[in-house]
Each structure stands twice: as C-alpha cells, then as structure tokens.
Length: 158
Image 1 (spheres, rainbow, N blue to C red):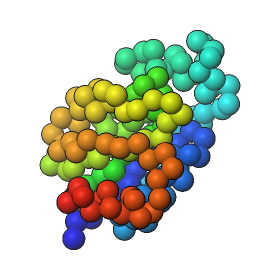
Image 2 (image 1 turned 90 degrees about the vertical axis):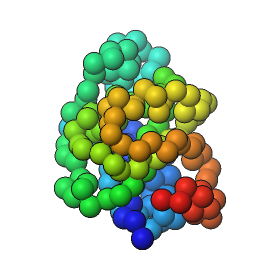
Image 3 (image 1 turned 120 degrees about the horizontal axis):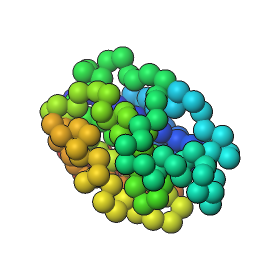
Image 4 (image 1 turned 90 degrees about the horizontal axis):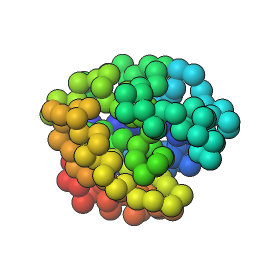
C-alpha cells in the first residue's frame, strides 16, 4: 500500500471540504497549504484589478509565501494537490508549494473546485515547478461524493 498525501489550498472553504472527503476516500493524510499572510475578502475580489489575488495571478513570477510545508513529504509516494481554480488555472501559491519541495519520482494528481471553469492547461503550467514528478492529470471535485472519489482513486492505481 502506497502512502498518500492530500495537500490543498482553500480560500473560502469549498476546496477544504473536497480535500477532506478525498483524504477519507483515499485513506490519505491531509495537509493544508496556508499562506503566510492570510487572504482577506478584499484580497480575493477578482473584480478589482488591484486586489492581491488579481495582482498575483497577473504576475508570472508571483510566489506567495506559505506558512510551512509538510515535515515528512519524503514519506509519501503520491500527492493529491488541490486548489480552487483562479483565472482558469491554479493560484500562484501552488507554484510556491511545488517549488519548495522535492517531488522527484512522486505521483502528483491534481484536483480542484471551480465556480465555472475546468482545469484547462493547469497541469502544463505547473509541470515546470516539479519537473521530476510523475504527473497523473486531474479532476474537478465539485459535488463529488465519497463513493465517487473512492472509485476515482482506485482507478488511478496509485
């Protein structure tokens, strides 16, 4: 049996709930990727071009600091990496997380929640941040049930 981690960033709680359900379905450990400076409602106002999230997403070099990483990432064989979709891709804090750790040989499976768009080209945008990982695609988890998540995890044959 491989050891699995579900690591996620959640701005409003939706991705957090999906991550907890996925961790239960996959019999995995759970880790929250937390920004060093928490996001406020004003920071997340995507209609304001000067909001923190808008500025970060418009800057390809933006790497928001995270509080900490998992202490034992080397113990895991596979990592489910989750986030809300922002501007049709992963928030830049996900790049911070990937670049801060060695994912060599680890399987990475993306999952996301979204109010209106899919994963698009998210995997190809994130691959350079962990080039030695084994990327396994991803899935939107909007409204997923524990049984559907269990079936998905089993289909991946981690």
